[in-house]
Length: 494
Image (cartoon, rainbow, N blue to C red; front, side, top):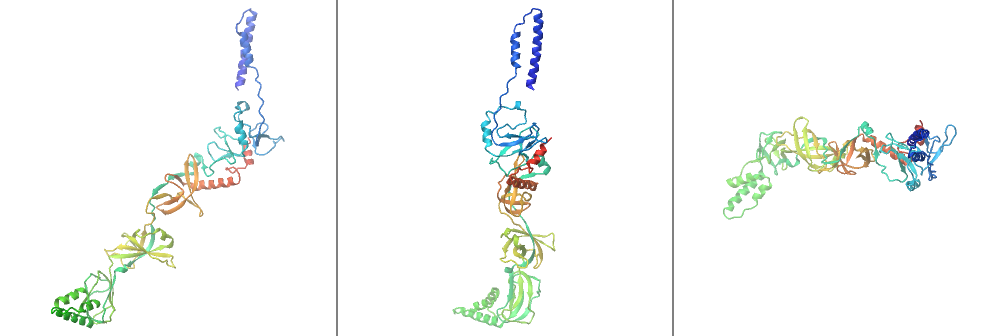
């Protein structure tokens, strides 16, 4: 265009100079400098000889249409009228500009020769979009696609998406943070007595029941309350011997073993102290409750004879009670001794009891594949009763702060666990991770990410699918966009 403009200006100047010379010559006028202007214009408009192009070297990169049409092919090809496509070698400039606008290639000759030694794979989008081409190409802004050679260092794991595609796919990312992971385990349970607070009232000698206190099964008793009055010949004999020894001790005779015999027969210390004070042998002995609690069993009536060791009453202190929860085998690893637990009675939906895990039983039920977990509950109000059903919620999880991501960020295929890292500017990288505890919609990551990394929490399955597709095509030696060279050549035709 520039040369055409110069030619037009030169012709106009020559015409003007000729007309001026003719006018001056016919009238005998002299125009100084006209001859110098004439020679300068002639030199300016002279045709510059074109330099002979250097011979092309290197491997054949592709074939182009002989008429200069934007049609290319990776292999030899013929036009519709039977003419061969022209080969384009690696040393030749790859551009769609006219030959006159191309810059000199003398300085780039060494780089072109080095590129010819490597195999050209394809051309990639200069903006990092997932678009490739087997032949030179320009994007919609006129930028040249960049060549990719075999062995060129590149991060094949990074996936690049355009801003429009990210917006259409609904990709959303969140940072990796440190927090405590808590996952409540909800299981059924039953209320049971604290085995350490159950007492059996019995005599250690044969006895006759003189009188039973007005106490029945289910009644509450306090420690020291009278349960039964008994007559035992053996206890009476031991009491008489004890009184004799006490009287003899006043005369300087050493005390014998009567006191110890009464203690061995189970006589309570209060009764022994009363005998020592009054120096009288009681005919009947009052048997009192050894602890606070409720009466679970009453096995005596007035006048009956009890043999040594027979149970008179069975008492239980329910101020502290157990809840036995049935925890599935798969959740046992998440439970620890001392973990907080919440108990809700099915008969009292609005009542909540707080406790802690006291014991994990060392066996698994064969039929249900569950393990008993014992929770100790303060039951001073007496609302929890043995054999009640309860809903138990046991807190489990990591005690300290751990790296955590939302559950939706993890892609679990069964054989691998992957998160998609957001590298910014439309770049994403799949990363295998090792998972920890789950809970509260979060999952702990023990390996694979660092605090502050951003992970994709929405549309990550689409990115992972594209990553797998690109990896498969790369293994087959094909461009990552999945289109064959023939298909792209046909698409390039006008």
